[in-house]
Length: 323
Ligand SMILES: C[S@@+](CC[C@H](N)C(=O)[O-])C[C@H]1O[C@@H](n2cnc3c(N)ncnc32)[C@H](O)[C@@H]1O
Image (cartoon, rainbow, N blue to C red; front, top):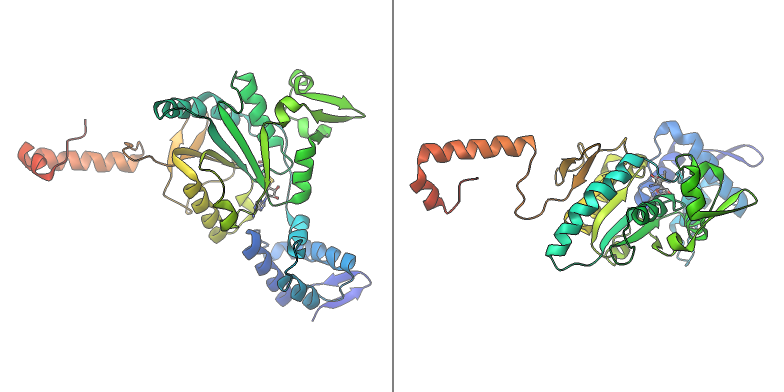
């Protein structure tokens, strides 16, 4: 049972902490290690106070047996997400997207008959990331709608509300120069409103990355940015999110993670691509000759075997020698 040591403050027992952290983890991937127990206790306690629910057990029961259209679990999760973001965050990666990735994908798309490239900002928070992509695209002379389509999703409804409103405070502009800001925003009372020329080109969607049935409805993507999102997940839920991205990417599509994130120990399905200033992941396409070290070693070994066996053996195996 929950111990209540002062009015309005609920102290979580170890068992309660495990019950709540598992419920949250299985719903949306957010992982609370024992060091974060106080944080979980505080946020859960806040919702309980608002709802006037006296014990963790009663609140947990309510969360598990809630069939309403506006589930309480979603509201609790809104309290638990970290929504820190700003325009042009990890700018070199965004430049690589515009200068190297989109041109490469654009050429490929042209060969396949054309059409816009689909970009998905997964975990977009209050919208600074997808809006940055549209601004950079406009600066590069691309036409959103014709050359690219930007989709952006988040589990947090308050963050999405802010994204759709498109009004920002000073802190969101820490990486943006004054002239770009003046070009795409108008100021009133210290708040900056994004112009319709940018705003209308992002499709915001409320989406939990673990809601497979809704994710199935999304288009196939050419680029997925999921930056500074999976750092809050444990290994198992990270793997599940990465598998979803693999499935939603077209072959030859790119996955961009945050600078502190990688696929080490999570997935070997992607190719690590070294761009001029960045490393990104790419879903291999059929017929790709992979450039990584292990494929190099394997190709050399196969070539050695073929040389030893002679051309007849190669012809009999039905496989051509790598050129
Ligand atoms: C720190 S923000 C990152 C924002 C932006 N990508 C960036 O790098 O600046 C992390 C976002 O991931 C969202 N998030 C966390 N778990 C999620 C889930 N299961 N499904 C969708 N979004 C999630 C949070 O609501 C939060 O807005």
